[in-house]
Length: 180
Image (cartoon, rainbow, N blue to C red; front, side, top):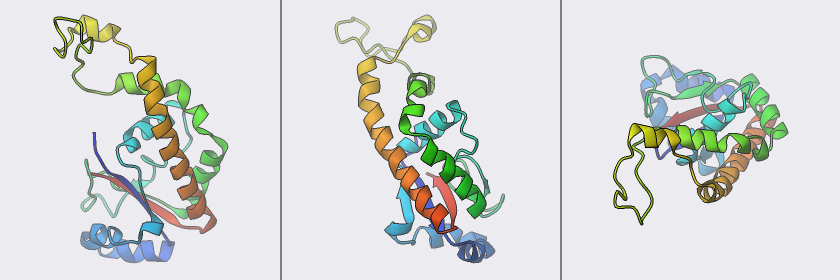
């Protein structure tokens, strides 16, 4: 899982300037002040998956267009994206109407659907920390306790995302996202 899921908000005019020198775009955006940035850390992938599962009309992480262009995008999988001011307003409106509780029914599905090697987590088992068989993996469920520890962190990051997009929408700004 990537450790960085970063957003930067900027005025449309400045976005045009940054985009006009695509090979310097990352360097320019990475120098923006903390007040115009939001780093979701490792929560970005789960939040994106939760918003997809909840059928958000515009997912603020994965929507938009490639930034600065197809040839010079960057990030974990060249996934730098930009949302126009209009798209930011649409995303913000939905985020403000959808509390984190809307995402919670999808948390188990998202966490269980994450790729990875499933291992036996029963310390009393002779096969502790060994990979599960495909049959065992298919029956595996995330313990409720684990979901209860994940949820507050994701709720906090989601609230930060809502606030970030609210400010961007009220300021008629664009938003660039990338992961690394």
